[in-house]
Image 1: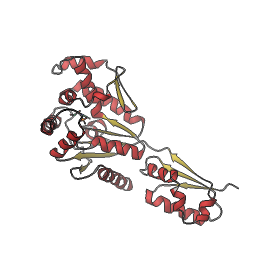
Image 2: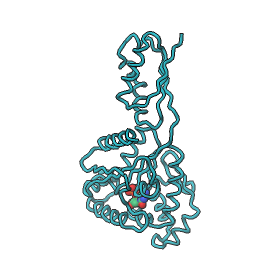
Image 3: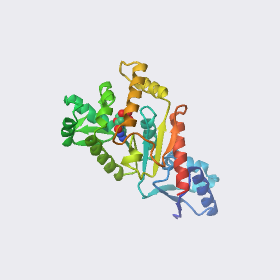
Length: 297
Ligand code: DC
């Protein structure tokens, strides 16, 4: 005989197991299927799923008899409101790495907006457009189509993803991203993409301009020497630490002082200094802060 227990879960991950145990124990002997519904915006989906996949939920159950008796656990995600996470900060503060990790933990989309500015800069350089001539840049990009698929950027159908960290692109991206026509084109695409699914966007103006109403906003920072060291360790190009440091200081200066959408901590954003934190420590801080915000909603 099939006997289903329906559970709507609205709690955090450590409490899930206790809640399931309690509900099953109360119905001892009468349950062989558990159906768990979780709001898709809660931040434990991935963890719960991995517990189920590893068969750990059953192992955690207080009674082995219950474990044997259970025939299946069905998990359904209640469709919930979409949400966005905005992460801003200077170059090398760890935004992209953290945003990617969080997107995977939370099973949401990730958009690296810096890569979009880099992609356009690469195309302009490749097609020998005078980057200092704003009108030429604007007329070149007016009809340029941008498609983002599987975290790769295509401009007019060309996959430009692998050129985003070219040194020549890095040197010129601040100049190009200062132009109004470039920003308005990319901001529109970013807003469109962020409406489609729950997503995490990282950049310089996400919390201030692109998504000022994002549910969660963060500002990541770190000492400039640490940021340069991180970039130096990841670069494949023949460039010294000192050159990278000089370049980051120059880009910080430009990004923070440009007229349009300068890099700023957005009102209401939580600031995290990642100087002495590991990636997982920063990710934990962010998740903790999101849960606290959910709690006080
Ligand atoms: O995050 P990144 O280093 O890949 O960004 C490259 C450049 O793009 C950075 O110098 C400033 C610019 N940028 C911007 O102006 N606005 C964004 N939302 C993202 C990046």
